[in-house]
Length: 324
Image (cartoon, rainbow, N blue to C red; front, top):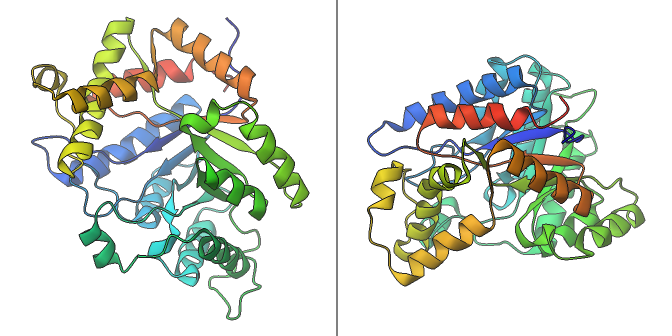
């Protein structure tokens, strides 16, 4: 099968592991970025999650700076900065600093998710996910970065970093109205006509459509082993839905031996059904079909598993399926 001819990128959420200090998750994110650069990945994005035991990344601008400082070519950005948590001027200045230090390598991905729980939202002071307010804040960030704000965001940059919106469902409409490129996952990639509507609308808004498909991917020597490697993440998702806490990753054997409620089992199976996993050949076929069917411009893998060596092998195998 010929290589898939779109850029390949990674989103790393700095997943913590049971029995390890949180700092190791952050250091592992940096090492994963270094490997991704060697393998020819196009972008490496980091996330924003607050007060979540299973995720160590609460400050994407700070972590992106560390990643960019330890790499030299790969694009580095946020997937994403949750704009309801921040003043637009602060976001603009953080990413202007990044762009000044690493010119031409920085992306700014913006999302509108609030905190994971009511206490987190209260601690953040983030209570408003109104789409109109979000669009206004997005435009404010772009104005500050472009030197058009009511005050001057510093440092001033010659070329502002590109802005992307993280979207699903209604978020695609918001990205289209803003005329911005989008990173999208889940059902929006499967519903016929959804992406075509976005493309028409973004052109009408004077923008150029660009779609990054966010996909959970795992490659191993067999389909069964790849499925096993996804179980730690699938269990964490199930636990978050039933206990209210998104936990650190556990090893595969611990997850396999855990008795699941019917609701938890359903969540695990739903997660696996929405993932692309198998041997390299199986994954190549499925991702190639996704690209052909949807016409996406880029694929961004979002996978984590407990065993970091297995994760590195999967990242390496995935890179071999794409034109570097």
